[in-house]
Amino acid sequence: MVKIGNIELGSFPLLLAPMEDVSDPPFRAVCKANGADLMYTEFISSEGLIRDAAKSVQKLDIFEYERPIGIQLFGSSIETMASCAEIATKAGPDLIDINYGCPVKQVACRGAGAALLQDIPKMVAMTKAVVDATHLPVTVKTRLGWDDSTKNIEDVAERLQDIGIQALTIHGRTRVQMYKGAADWELISKVKNNPRIKIPIFGNGDIDSPEKAKEYRDRYEVDGIMIGRASIGYPWIFNEIKHYLATGEHLAPPSLQQRLQVCLDHLDFSIRWKGNHGGIVEMRRHYANYFRGMDHFKPFRTRLVTTYEFEEIKGILNEIAAHYAGEPLHA
Image 1 (cartoon, rainbow, N blue to C red):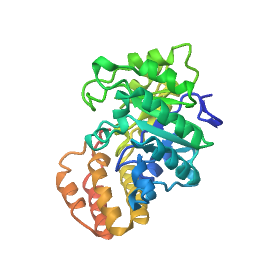
Image 2: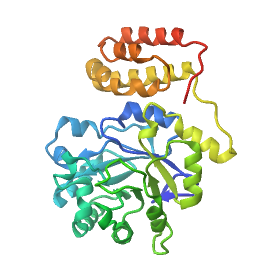
Image 3: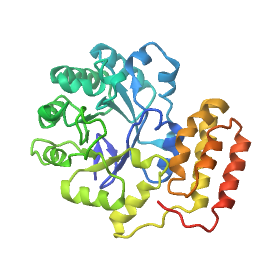
Image 4: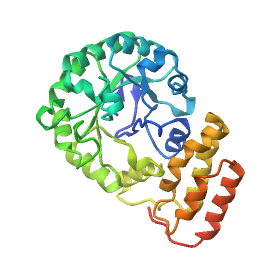
């Protein structure tokens, strides 16, 4: 049984990665319904939360059916991060996660996210301040290092464990790599197999199929896997991996009707959470992924991303159902 504090996650948990503008409550709902064991909010700016910025505050929204769920924070100020940990704790999550992995310029160039990989003493001090500011388990998500010459994750893991984090997720790339090239799981495995490391170690990067999940579990011996981009528009990946790990057999891919229904459920929740305009606009990023692999889909997608009317979108989805009925679907 893998545990974070007192949170039991099963023998090999599958985690939904926190993804900006993706892993909001509507998206998390469809992933939870399809097998995600632990989920996180979109990462929340500590500066935005301190200023009571509406977008940051809204990201604190969590729902009982999502549990266990973590709120993920990022920032460059130790004092601000500690204050935000107190605010986030009051929102009632099961854990607090710190983002030391985001590579994008808007975050890293402001001294937050993966930028802390260039200042390990500050990373340790910031983590200690967050641990001291909450009674909840604190976890960390980070990368192998800043670049190929500073892959310091083995030292980082020990130091963060020593000041009280209760799980560590490692993305198998450096900040300089961004999301390019293959993720290096060998270093993740070294951290996991370090006899000093007692906390769960989760691997992240390039897991996009049940076969790869099994291969990486067996080869690198991690405690669980975090899945990000492969779940966008395909939340079924969690249950597909679980079934394959348990039986060695593949679940049947989702039918067209299942794709349409989950897409519609996602849209409905998005509208209820963000309002008609915001919910419809935010959903546009997902359509191409929900219907990935369907031949000649572009005309339908163009219509889906240009309408502002819920009933019109439902009509287009009904047209898709009729147009592709009986055609084979690709995962």
